Length: 120
Image (cartoon, rainbow, N blue to C red):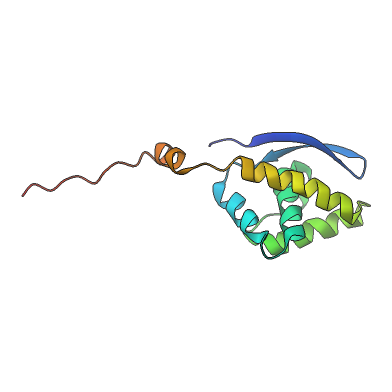
């Protein structure tokens, strides 16, 4: 998957935003795995990577727990309610999960082939 995937438009704090899940499968997996430790942080991190406006203010450094905290703090400072962040983040989280690729797609994307056979 080479491009970001579009999701539904969500509304948070009066802003209407179209979420676009990143194409980067590693980012998606890092955030999805955070869910078992802290679902609300995972939702906030998902919202951050799917919402381009936030990306102008915050950088994702492969630390989804810290990033989720930063997204939550930024949005609360801008007047969003915690409940709105969680609900919008759950939509972004689902967008991340929906765009995961499977084993066959990975093989096709990377063009895996069998190892050459040795003559012998």
